[in-house]
Each structure stands twice: as structure tokens, then as C-alpha cells.
Image 1 (spheres, helix red, strand yellow):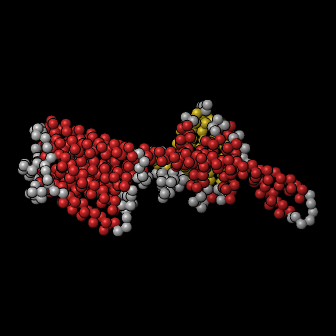
Image 2 (tube, helix red, strand yellow; image 1 turned 60 degrees about the horizontal axis):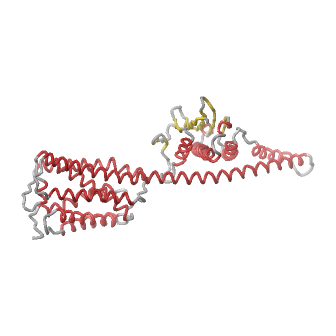
Image 3 (cartoon, one colour; image 1 turned 90 degrees about the vertical axis):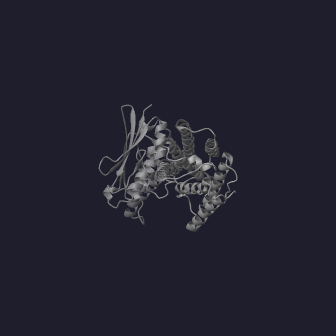
Length: 447
């Protein structure tokens, strides 16, 4: 009889379906949900249980049992796709993590039953053996599944979402398929041992458990590395795009400053001519024009063209926005760094500092200080700005976390600066130890 309601395996299908649904809920709850999500969730959950209930028990063997669980898994994938607005590969990724978690919990519980002799879980798969449930077995089941599910969620799934910055798009499908093969081969081999006629003693059970534990853990690690590597590649692409944009802005700023200097030179000649004239041109008007020209023409000469360019460009902006920008630098110490690298590094540092102090109304807090000095075969670049105690500053791997809401597209400026410093054998450090001062220090060995 294919629908033998007295067979433990018939009802165990529903238990597996519930375990998968819970595991998939933990792995997918942050995905983009479709409209009427609650209704979709209720319908899809009932559908998965209906599929599990409808699967007949035709024969008791490893291949057919694995086929039943595979059908339930496929049904759960369709259920997730019905609930979440995500591509199929993302749904499959979360489903595979969930299936691996469920299998890991099952193997741990089965091993615990084997070594404590509190029950024979293998009897579920055998239509001839008696399967009984006791209170201690239920308690062990609840504790083991809760611990395994929590562990995978806390130490793997949360880190996956953090490293992916909310972007779960997958590119390396080869690793995804390798991971799939590992877990499904492991499940099929486990089924073969369940139907083996060889008596499973404690040693054999422990060896099988360790094999499954290692295989499942390897699968989870591969899946984690899939998004971990993808996140690193995404960050690198973003930083490289920033470097290209910095190069374009450097060339543009250089042309603009050169043009301004030429115009200033011409205007100063015209002013000298106008001062000698009598008539309609008033002295006050001439004075205002001369002050404006002198500001454009009073470029800071640090000994490094890139630093001079940044001071001329950002000095104008700061003057217009009542920000005090000062520079004490021996710019010649920076001449061994390529113009594009130095511009990208300094412009990000100055822009971040300016953005940080613009929110303050107190003029004494609206300052940015730049200093460059050389000591003990190292050149130090320091950028300082005011930092209120109330400012929420969280350091992640030594770098401040961006305060912008769109964290996937921001926070790369400091990473870009750090990579450039490391390119020249140097380092970048952030310090807030001095009261009300945010200090960025780049230390690079002199060639």
C-alpha cells in the first residue's frame, strides 16, 4: 500500500518538510519580498506540506528515499520563488544552504541517538522495523536542531549577508554546482548506509557522522567563500572605478586651475591699467575685484604640484562655505608617489574631512588641517578635522563604517586610500584618541 499511514517514513516526510521550511526561513528572510508576502508564505508553506504528504511510499530503498526528499526540496525552492523577488540562482543558493543545515542537524541528531542508544532513527527508513519515540528523544531533537540552526544562522548566514552588503547576485556558478554535488552525494551515500544490512555500531556511526559533518561543513564553507570572494571582487571593481574617476577629475582640475591662473594674471594687468584711469571706475569696485583676483592667485606652494592643485581647488570651496583649510607641508617629500595615486589619496581624505565638518554650525569646528612631514625614512600625511563626541563612529577592520544609508555604494574612499598606501609599502590608520579630533594618518616609507 503506497499510502500506509502507519509507516514512520510516511510521516517523517512532513517532518523533513518542516525542517526545510524553517531552515529556508532563516537563510532568506532578508531577501526582497514580493507583494502580499504573508499570503504567499501561507500558500507556499501549505503547498510544500501537500507535496510531502502526496509523495507515496512505493519502495524502501536509498535511491527512492533520496528521490522523495529531493522532490520536497524542489517544492520548497518553488515556494521561496513564489515569496521572494529574486533570481533563481539566489533562491537555489539559499535553498542549498538550508538543505545543508538540515542535513547537518539530522546527522548530528542521528549520531547522538546512536551513541546514547535513546532511539533508532534508522528504523524510520525501514518498513519492517519498529520506530518508537520517547520524551528524551524529543528533547534531544529540539536542542540539537535549535543549536545547529542557530549556529549556521549566526556564524555563516549573517556574515554572508554582511559581506555581500545586501547584494546576493552570484557570478561564480561553478562553485555553486560543486557545492550542490557535495551535499547531494553526501545525502545519497548517507541513505545507502541507512539501508545497509551491516549492523551499525558506535564506531561505524561515529565515522559516518564525521564524514557527513566534514562534507556538510565543506559545502557551507564553499558557499560562504562564493559570496565572500564576490564581495571582495565587487569592492575592487568599485575602487578601480573610483581611481579612473579620480584620474579624470585630476586632469580636469589641473586644466581649470591653469586656466584660472592665466586669467588672474591677465586681470591683474587690467587692474593696474584701470587704476591709472580716471572716470567711471570707482576705487571700491576696483578693490573688490582685486581681492577676488588675489584669492584666486594666492595659491599655496607646497613643493608638490598635486597638493598645490588640491589646495587651490578645495581652498575656494572652503572659503565659500566658511571652512578653514590649512596646510603645513613639505610637499617635495611626496614627489616619489605618482600624481594620480597621490591625487586620489589626498582628494578622498580632504573631501571626507570637509563633508564631516560641514554639518557643524560652530565656526570653530569647521576646520580641516593637512600636514606632511618626513621622519626616520617615512613620510607622514595627516588630515585632521573636528569630531563631536555625539558622532556615531563605528570602526570595522580599522576603517569607519559609512554613515550613509546606501552602504553598498559608499564607504570605498578610505578603502581606496588604504590600497594606494599599501601599494607603496605604507599603511593607513584612523585615530580618535585625541579629544574632539578625527585623525587620518598615512605612513609611507621613503624610497
